[in-house]
Length: 399
Image (cartoon, rainbow, N blue to C red; front, top):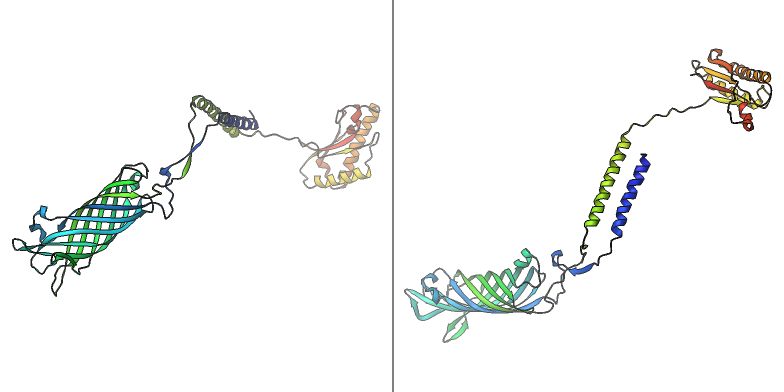
């Protein structure tokens, strides 16, 4: 099989397989929002929320361990306004109030309750209230991907704030002029009860640093507070996040027949490729070309003398032949067998060959290079209408 035929067959088979696919009925393509492909950021006015929460905290300080655990619990409350900038990252600002119950070694401490002691320690109670802010990370959306209908979300946050301290003096709460800083961290366990409302359990650790002495000499004491809050959050519109729109192409009902035909086409293509590879690997046959005579000089009917033009041609041939004296040549005289008698044709053949030889010798060709002969046949043998092609002298390289 020829190479061109193999290539054409492979192309036709491939095009046929493509046409087979094209003939299948077109399936309807649908477009859906796919959160697994990411989310689109909403406008600044979207995804705001407000949270109110109340709970209790327990105060931890160096001396508080001497007070009963049940006597150290105190109320706490917060209110926040916040925004989610993406399904994972958000922030909130608000006001936090907490009450601290502890122990002090002397009456000069802030918040000492007159007459209330535990052994040699004085009971203390004071309120902290002030602005706070948090940076929030929704761990559920981060680790599990955003899903708008998810019921539970776990959110981690870290933040800071500043508290004003109030103590009870003369049966009223007064500013103790103890402004303290706080660092805080926590995790919010939120449950969606509707698209607008969430209930939450907020577990928070707060570290505080404040002035503890009411006298002329003050010192700071680091302490912390662990709190738990139950909260309710209202989500303002827009509450959800838009996802990129992606096409969904349904699978055909049954592809077995199509797969079988494609498999057969693939097998046929592989077979044709193997045949083509074998064909290309075969050695190329060397074709010996017959270059024919070095030159052919033609004559009019009954003429053996070289014309002026033919004389110039033979001189040019002599120049080529004389370049290599080792090459041998055969000069053959011809005449047509359709006109004239045998005697006339024999003479024409001989005189034509001898005339060419004479010019060759005169133009540098060695006589040892030449063999002069005649041929009684027709040179072209194309019939009587082509007899002009039979009246000639040929010069060929001897084999």
